[in-house]
Image 1 (cartoon, one colour):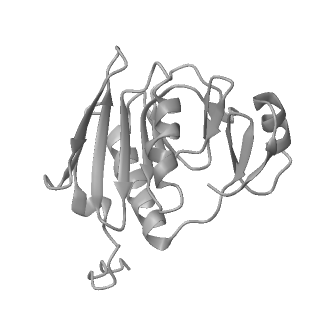
Image 2 (cartoon, one colour):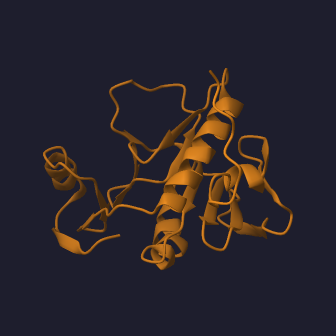
Image 3 (cartoon, one colour):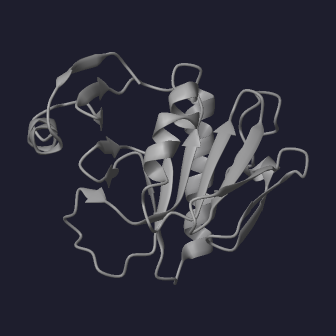
Length: 193
């Protein structure tokens, strides 16, 4: 998150944000300009979008990236790095979702504490949320929080297992696919002609 710009209501923020060139997040009256990420951050998001999208093909669920925001009550509007919604009632013109079953945040040093704390607290208010995932592209750490109906969460560090297992969408993905393309020493796939 960048520096807060000024206080406003969610309705004011949504109207104001429509006129802005960049993206902004909203949290309890404060507006934050979103800053660019790193190559590793972008690579992990692209890998997740490809594999989750392929996995969900033909299902009622859809995967979204940073271009669509998630709104929580009147208190927050975030752009998750990746999220999945299984809402069958939607319009192609919607600019926000309130029904994610899965939210994935790819950590960066400037946002990690917010992603782990206040942002996770807000996401847990969503009745549809089943899993919240934090992925650190630098340490290659993968943490999955399963959210139960009673508000409790089960934490699982999946790093050592070498697999990202998401019960919310029945996905089992090797971590080497999550982190593919992160190292310059990795052999590039042959280009098809």
